[in-house]
Image (cartoon, rainbow, N blue to C red; front, top):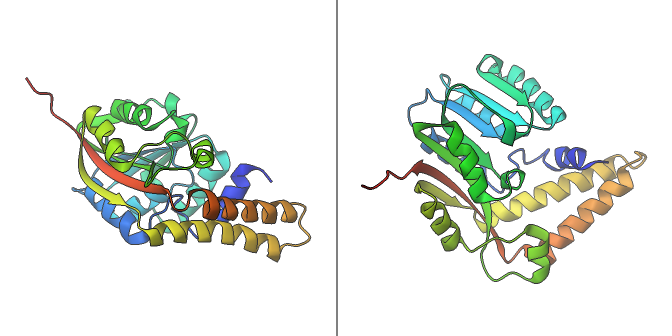
Length: 247
């Protein structure tokens, strides 16, 4: 079972692939779409959950998504058709870094996809190239809530604390106009949902060739979360606007 299939099964009960509940997603999108007629781009859209929610809640929004997973994009197309928003959604099967558009976007989303660009600031640099002058960026990234172990750093990367993360964003020319730090409940619900869904699939399909692998993966990932990073890792989502240049 490849990583893409594991991710699809693991997120069956938590389609937003980040530790955010429905109310948090709704509030962040409302702040990112103040007029309800914006053009939206998701860099690393996966199965398009952010875009689909934007389209359903804002009937005049138009959206585009970019991802390297053909299966995830096919899932997004099916969901868009089921929701009746397919005419307002365009999907691109390609590397997000290579995506080029002739028109700017009013909201650029990249939540939990900074690894595709090599980090938070490179992700913001990519978003900037697609953004209209008064546009907004909705970005989500992990941070260290307290000093991590060496094992946690090796597993999740060289993150910083929340204040330093925001300082880096501000120094890069952005002003936060909304923010959300995932609560302990959101963080725990996300992990329980992911590894519980994967374990349940394995238990429900004992004769499947990948059943043992799926169950082992769920057990390992759950243990890593509980023992390695649960008490140190946090997740912040920010809505950003460009900071005006000073004379």
